[in-house]
Image (tube, rainbow, N blue to C red; front, side, top):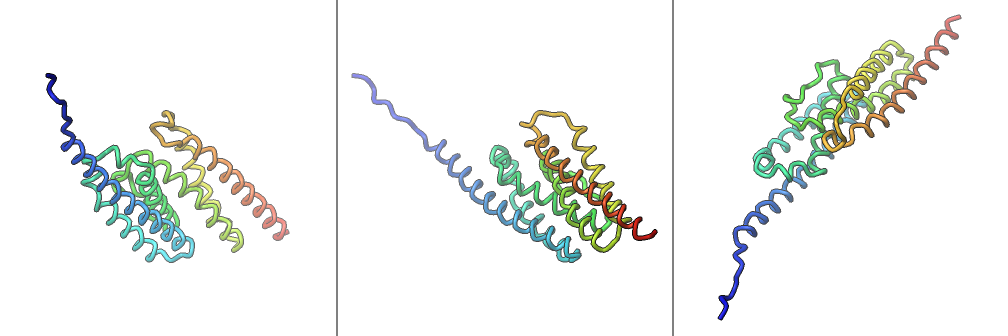
Amino acid sequence: MATKISFDISQAVEVLESQHSAREEMLSISRKVIQLSSASIRSTHRQELDKAQELNEQSLELLNSCREQMLEFPEISANSMFYDAQKEYTESCVTLAVISGTSIPTMSQLDVQAPAYINGIIEAASELRRTILDLLRQDNLSRANELLEVMDEAYSMAVSIDFPDALTHGLRRTTDAFRAVLERTRGDITTATIFSKARMH
């Protein structure tokens, strides 16, 4: 008589339970970081720089709270929601740095993944369009041109990167969208400059 076969999946179930718990926690943290980062960017545009910095620090605390899970479950940390949280955090920190005139934080300083860092920089550069339009309404062409140079530098950086989209999380698509924003902004500054010179004559 054949021996009855049984499957011992207790260890596998235990691993899946651990992964599920880590995933749920990281998704919850990711949502909070994305919300805080968005609020930080709004505060930066309103020149509420201290508040923006405070919100970024809250995001950092949340991201740090799941560093162990990131190391233990790298496949979960690659999840799009957690990646988006790191990208949005990068965007908010870089936007604040540019607007406040402080040095741009490095990837190591932010402790985020490489694709999130690069894409976050591009999205931060896109955010500068809003500030530039505000500056043009204030006839502050000098500062508007300074920020346009930052946008140009970000675009040059982006197009210099040549890796598959699977590694860069769609950087090529992000860069294409940014190029359109950059050219519209350049056109707005050019038009404002022409009108400014015309008023002087």
